[in-house]
Structures are given as C-alpha cells and as structure tokens.
Amino acid sequence: MDEVKWLSNDEQVAWRSWLAVNAQLTARMNRDLQAKNGLSLADYDVLVNLTDVPDRSLRMYELGDKLQWEKSRLSRQVMRMAARGLVERRECLDDRRGAYVDLTPAGLEAIQAAAPEHVKLIRQVMFDAFTPEEVAALTKLYQGVLERLEVKPPTVTPDGSVA
Amino acid sequence: MDEVKWLSNDEQVAWRSWLAVNAQLTARMNRDLQAKNGLSLADYDVLVNLTDVPDRSLRMYELGDKLQWEKSRLSRQVMRMAARGLVERRECLDDRRGAYVDLTPAGLEAIQAAAPEHVKLIRQVMFDAFTPEEVAALTKLYQGVLERLEVKPPTVTPDGSVA
DNA sequence: ACAGTCTAGTTTCTGCATCAACCGTTTGCC
DNA sequence: GGCAAACGGTTGATGCAGAAACTAGACTGT
Figure 1: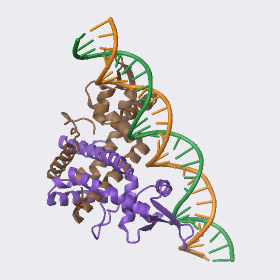
Figure 2: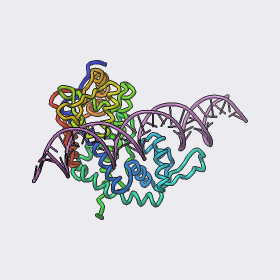
Figure 3: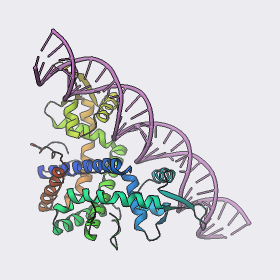
Figure 4: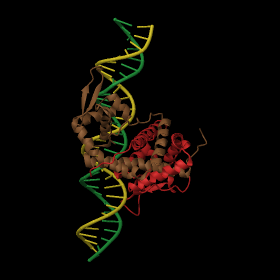
C-alpha cells in the first residue's frame, strides 16, 4: 500500500479540468433550468426518463434504476413533483407494494418547454465545438470509466427523443 | 428561437455517458473518502487547495476563488473544518474585514492519509487506462468547455503536489 | 401452509447547498 | 472630508441528499 504513484502534471491538469467542468456545468444547467423554467436538474432528469419510455410511465424501481439514485431520494423527488402536478403516482395492481409514476400533460409540457434551451446550452459548450471523432473518443473513454466503476453504461437511445 | 437542433444519437450517448460518469464517480469518491478517512469530498478539496500553496494559508476569498464556491458555502465549510481542527481561522491585520484560513498539522495529516487511496481510485478508473494522447485530448476538450462557460481554467500546477 | 427472506417503497434524522439579507470595512470620487 | 459603492465575510431560512430503520407485500422451500 506504499509507493504511491501520483498523477503526472499533465494528468493533474486534465483531472482538475474535469472537476471544474463537472462542477461548473452542473451548476450552470441547474441555474438556467431553474431561472427559465422553474425546474431543477433533478426534475429535468426525471422528466427525461419518463418521456423516453413509450407509455410515459415507469415503476419507481425502474426509474430509480435508470437514474441510479438512492431510493429515498427518488421517493421524495416524485412526491414533490406529484405535488406540483408534473407527474402522477398510480398504484400497481399486480404488485401491491409497487407504484407507477406517470408523466402528466403538464409534465410533458414542462419538459418540452425546457428542453430547447437546455439542449442549446449543451450544444454550445460541448458538441458544437467537438468533431464527430472527438465525440466518439469521449464516449469510448467515458464508457470505459463506467465499466471500471462497475456501473452499467447508459442505455443507447434507439430513437431521437428529448435530450 | 424555434427550429431546435437536437442531439444526434451519438451525441446523446456521449452526453448520457458524461452525466453518468459525473454522478457516479463523484458519489464514489465521496463514499470512499467518507468511509476510509472520515472526509467529505468538500473537505478534501479545501485541504488540497491549502496544501497546494507555499505557506499553507489562504485568504477566504482566494480559497473561494480557487474552489469556485458560493461564499456562504465556503464560510460554513471552513467553520465546520475549524471545529474539527483541520484548519484554523486567523484574522487579517491589513484588512480587518478579512480572514485567513491556515492548514493545521492535523489537516495536513488528514490529507496525507487520504490522498494515496484517492489518487489510486482516480488512476484506476481513469488515467491508468488512458494513453498520454487521450489525456491531452481530454484536457483540450475540457478547457474548451470551461472557456465557453466563461470560467477560467484551473491553474496549471507548477510542481508535483498532492492530487 | 407457513417461516424466512427478499423486494418495493416510505420515513426519519442529520448534514450540506443555495439564496438573500445583512454587517463592518475599504475604496473611489468629488 | 465625506458619501456612495464595492468588497469580504457571516447568518438565517429553506430545500435537498444520503444512510439507516421501517412497513408491507411477495417469493422460496419444505
């Protein structure tokens, strides 16, 4: 456990840049969404995952699986969103422990209103400045990291759906 | 403001991978640091920034500038860390509004104990699997993002210091 | 059929992050 | 000199995230 192999200078710069991008971009997305659409990033993520799926309804555990959230977090988040009318809880008949989360028309409207600006930001700071090769390289590196973290990589989107 | 240019499928995969790495790696670092060293990632970041600097002491605003944190966040964080003996507050004589934050021996010890495992994780999931060219490419992309976010890129480390 | 275990989801507790308001100090400017 | 504005930092209110304990329903083997 001794003989630590530190990061080289180049690696340190890369690492700190990563940390900075991570923090700043997340903060920025949060602020923009909040200011322009009254949504938190967490709200947005839930809405995206519901919009993604054919019938716009998921079991709690499926949603939690996609988001990789603590279940307590999801529980509370859904409760708040339901209170605001963005989603609806529906009890599950085949498994009486379970619960569905349905996207409401208001929820759909909210994400449709928020998505364009959100995507615009992402394009602006990232993809519009990247070549396709760079995108491919990034994806490869990220997916490698996810594997090493023993997390399953995100599901490949089959069609073109919301951000 | 109409005619939204959505993300392509490849871009979506890259983007979601990015989000996943972002969330998962941060969570992992936090849990590991907490479990093995009783430090939060925020604690660690403060300690790193203090260790980085020659005299191991910074003005609050300098520290806040490096971390890019809300000042209220920094204020509370430092208060908590001072209560645990990891840092020490010292009043500033030339500017009576100001305050210094000094790294204590205990704080130094704490980060020296935590750093090896932390760096090991980062190496394991990222840099050990990256070629130097990939590191360089990543850095370039990240720094581009930071510029587009109108945030100044992280200071290049002049010497080899802690993670 | 029933005991043990597992799964789905909620709740409680605690700590942290953000926003806005605030206080004392310094600075710029006339 | 004196006043307004900016700066450095703290505080209060509020809302969210994480860990663990908890409830209730479902599955397993015998």
